[in-house]
Length: 150
Image (cartoon, rainbow, N blue to C red; front, side, top):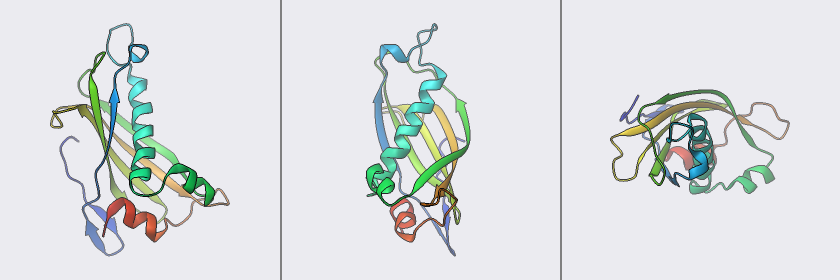
């Protein structure tokens, strides 16, 4: 799954989505008994990176909540490729790989800063956009454009 530049379906157009970046430094309490980052920590980093992506796209989480929206993860697939150790700085790159009417597929890659071609972990995360009634809702055009450009 590494190093692909996905395109997203946006109505009738195929587009190349924005790539959003988040940085994380490995802290001592994120290590397991093998002295590398515990697998579950990547899930936390990927979650935060998705929040960061929305904020970088102009939709900070408080605004999303104020509008009564939500984004619920319904499926997550992750592949661990290379260990990360104490003090390493990782960059998580997040982009929308598919954009449906009510759902989106995020493609996320965590790699050491300065070596984006060597991934530590890679995830594909399916999320559903939720309206104020807490049911799947059409993703607003402004959100589509902010995440995927035009």
